[in-house]
Amino acid sequence: MANILIAGCGDIGIRLAGLLNRQNHQVTGIRRHPPENPNETVTFFQADLTQASSFTALSLNFDEVVFMPTPGQRSTASYQAVYDTALENLLKHFEKAERPPHWFFISSTSVYGQSNGEWVDEDSVTETNSPSGKLIRRAELRLLSALPETTIVRFSGIYGPGREYLLNSARAAPEIVLDPPYYTNRIHQDDCATVLVFLIGLRLKGEKLATCYLASDDYPAPQWEVVSWMTEQLGCRPPSVKPPSTPPDLNKRCDNKRLKALGYEFIYPDYRDGYLPMIQKIRNDQTSSEAAKCKE
Image (cartoon, rainbow, N blue to C red):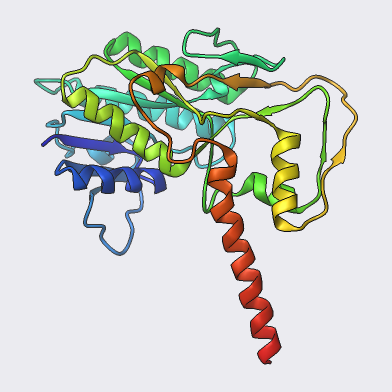
C-alpha cells in the first residue's frame, strides 16, 4: 500500500483516487473547497496551493505526489499561480521530507508548437507561442531540475461528461476548414485517470519509467471529420466549409506509442467510442423532454 497525494484534486483527481483506493492505497487530496459530502475514497486536506501558509500542517510522508491543479481561468495570471507559485510552494514543503516523494507532473500537449499537422511524440521540440504552454513547459523543466526522476504525463484535449466543448460546437453548425485538415487530439477523462493508475502501478512494482509520456487516444482526427460525424449522429445540420486563412497556431498529431508500448489499453481508443455514450444521453434526454411535453 502506498501513501499518495493528489495536489489539486478536482474531477479527474477524484476519479483517480477512487481507482487507487480500490487497490488499497491511501489517498489524500488537496483542494481549496472540499466537497460538502465526504468522499470515502480520498481524505481531503483543505488548502490553497498558492498560499504556502495554508498547508504547513500537510504530512511529509508520501510515496507519490500527483501534481494536477487546474488554473481557475484561461489567463496568464491563473497559469502563473498554478505552474509557478503553487509548484514552488509544494516543492519547498517537501524539501523538509527525509525521503522526498516521487512526483507525477500532469502536463499538456499545449507545450508543442507544431502547426502543419506533424506527428509529435515525447522527444519532439517543445517550442510554442502559447503563453500557457510556455508556463507549463517552464514548470516541467523546473521540476525536473529539482527532481530528475519526475514523471511527466502530457494529456491532449480532455473530454467526457461535463467537458463537452466540441460536442456543443457541433450542435451549433460551425464553419470548419476542410483543407488543409486541422487535427484534433483528445483523451477521455476516464482514460486520464486510468493512465495515471497504470503508471503509478508500474512504478510501485519497481519498473523504471521514462521521463515523459504523451497520453492521447489512438486516432488524431481532422476536426471536419469529427464534427461531421457528431452532427450525423445528432441529426443536426452539418458543418459548412470555412475558407483557409492564416495557418492555425497549433495543428499536430499526437503519437502515444511510448505509453502503449508499456501495455496500456485505452478504454476509449478513438472519438467515436468516447462520444457515442454522450450523444446517446443527449438523445435520451431529448426523448424524455418530448415525452413530458406530450403529457402536459
